[in-house]
Amino acid sequence: MHIGEKRLVISMGKIYVFVNQKGGVGKTTSALNIGAFLAEAGKRVLLVDFDSQANLSSGFGVNSAKPGVYELISGAAPIEQTVRETSVPKLSIIPAGIDLSGAAVELINQEAREFFLKKALEPVRSRYDYILIDCPPSLGILTLNGLVAADAVLIPMQCEYFALEGLSLLLKTIKRIQKNLNPSLDMGGIFFTMYDSRTRLAQDVVKQVQSYFQNKIFSTIIPRNVRLSESPSHGMPITQYDPHCTGAKAYKNLAQEVIQRGF
Ligand SMILES: Nc1ncnc2c1ncn2[C@@H]1O[C@H](COP(=O)(O)OP(=O)(O)O)[C@@H](O)[C@H]1O
Ligand SMILES: [Mg+2]
Image 1 (cartoon, rainbow, N blue to C red):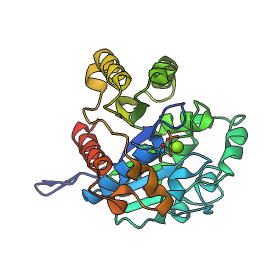
Image 2 (cartoon, rainbow, N blue to C red):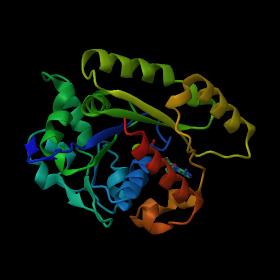
Image 3 (cartoon, rainbow, N blue to C red):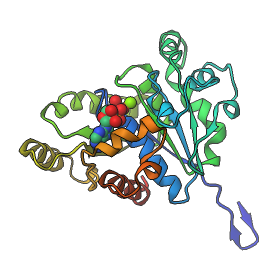
Image 4 (tube, rainbow, N blue to C red):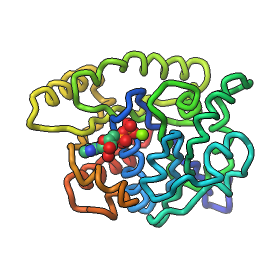
């Protein structure tokens, strides 16, 4: 669109999905804290809690909130009614509740069942710089919806031996989505979480994955840091709970890398 000499660019928010079918690898912690640091950097951020365990929602002190993401994808509520402000300026969230687990069952027999989240987010895309989707620990229909809605996948990986198990299935799933349902999905990258530099194993896992995936690996590694695990129980991201701890510094760097890589 041209207005005189100036070019008016209508920016569309980038949509990132945090995926790993293993539980406890840091999906929620990463979505929460990367989101908080992106907002702190002045970006408009929308978090989408797409896990019926609702850990992301409770990490902001938003509990059993209705209408939430279930009402959104089932068409029971318009998106405006599902978006909540958080304690962090510029950071909003669409919360989840336990009813989301029923959505998986309801969706499975519907036509275009992988496209519900994508369609639901379309009307608000231009209002945000980043939309971050936190997925459940499975490769079921909710995660597939996340992958179809996204521009890029971010894979948190715990630095332990069994981390690599399941990675090939995850990569196959991403390829299948790229081929059939979302050709513009970018393999954003893998980043390491809960790194303990004292263990030889953690170092070996990092080296092995780095040599295999090379430029798909984020250079920031998130250390194991107890402050990161404490902050959700206070309903705060690490930017508010303890902005100077090692975990906070790492997530700040990771958020910067997300901005720089751009995808
Ligand atoms: N870097 C870290 N250091 C210490 N504890 C962490 C770290 N990242 C996550 N945790 C804790 O580990 C558990 C699993 O993390 P979570 O983000 O919920 O994983 P997922 O969403 O993949 O299941 C949570 O209790 C969380 O607080
Ligand atoms: Mg989680």
